[in-house]
Amino acid sequence: MCAHVVVAEDDPKQAELIRRYLANEGHRVAVVHDGRAALDEARACRPDLMVLDVMMPRVDGLDVCRALRADPALAGLPVLMLTARSAEDDLLLGLDLGADDYMTKPYSPRELMARVRTLLRRAASTASPAPATDPVLRVGPVAVDPVRHEVSCDGRPVACTPGEFALLALLAAEPGRVFSRAQIIQHLHGFDRYFTSRTVDVHVMNLRRKIEPAPERPVRLLTVYGVGYKLVPGPDRTPGADAPATPGKDALDGA
Image 1 (spheres, rainbow, N blue to C red):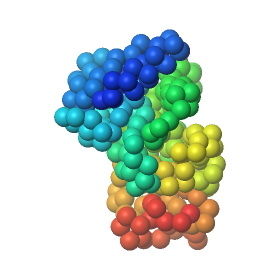
Image 2 (tube, rainbow, N blue to C red):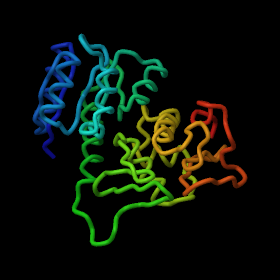
Image 3 (cartoon, rainbow, N blue to C red):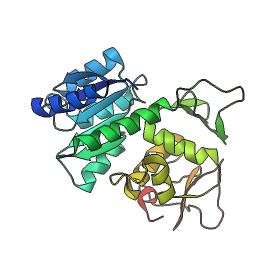
Image 4 (spheres, rainbow, N blue to C red):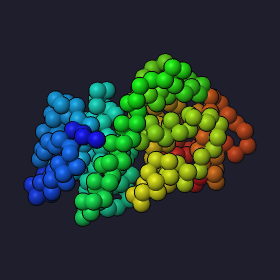
């Protein structure tokens, strides 16, 4: 598929390398070299994907990602983040801000293109015509529309990143079923070595902020300790489900 991709990279050589690989696969590419230009380009042209370096002048990549997710028109834009920082905390921070994938430098251009294809396929899979029956997945107050790529909770729209949407749609398709982290990883990224159990936890934590009445005491997106996660219509206090937890601990605790 031909897509419109914005490459935000302050190193001209790296930017040109990425541009050439993308162009060779038939994509239209706009290259910018600072964060402010990245935001301006995204707002002007509504691209299909952004390849975003973290360390950039004017506005860094983390703040760019934060601004994209705060903009309703761009909240669903797939973002593949690039950085020279390889620490797990940096990876989790990028995902916490809404990045859909994360690569550390140096990286293989072929692997970068494979990740681009994965993100574009995932985004395109939600653009098919609506079937005759209602496609919306409803679990209590949470509604997930896989055709229109929309989420609502208690009747209000919820902006989700592609990764968050894919996870929520997986859980909503079988309410009450417990999915292990390994099953979630396989579904979302085919055991991508950068998509780990910790990144699943971050997506869960972000979703809880968006669909739970009190994220620190979840009643919808639950942890079943030692097993995984499930989505339920409302309060569920069956054995093994979440008990009231210390704020911030539940999402990253050992399922």
